[in-house]
Amino acid sequence: MFIETEVTPNPDTLKFLPGRVILEVGTANFTDLDGAEASPLAVAMFALAGVGGVFLGHDFVTITKSHDTEWDELKPNVLAGLMQFFASGAAVLNQDASTDSTGVSVEEDEADADIIDQIKTLLDEKVRPAVAGDGGDIVYRGFKEGVVYLQMQGACAGCPSSTITLKHGIENLLKYYVPEVVDVRAVE
Image (cartoon, rainbow, N blue to C red):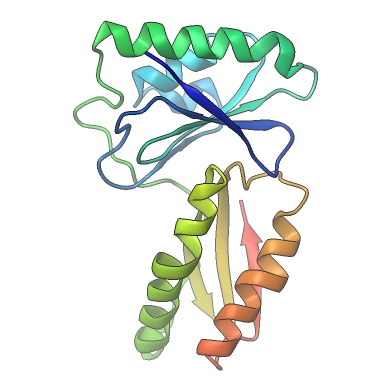
């Protein structure tokens, strides 16, 4: 098995492409071992010293390293761990696991349903595919009083350029197509 590796805009994160489907639908974000029990793959990655986060996409795995770890030390271990995991034939997610990520959600006004649908469509069609190319995801968390709340995941979480992407890219796009949007904010 050959696993390609791509750099991401986040220097603490690498994107691994094993040449196979990881998740048929959705994404899964794991920020620590305690939350990784839904994914044997994430548990296997967290068993490696220096792994600080695991993000699963359609056809990629994004690994975020701890700040005190160097990629020269960690990357070979991640590659070996991924090869060993896929050779085992184990499921990436447990059968009863959901790919819905947890996070803050904002209480929304039902009167904004049409606006919310427009925002979600723009995010799904224009933003999320581009962000997935960088090894991450942006999850909609709510819309209230003109403010769109989004959660950054994978390579996007903690990325030095994520604020620029959020404010100048996503905010401008949403404001252009949905005039009711006045601000975009990241939530944890």
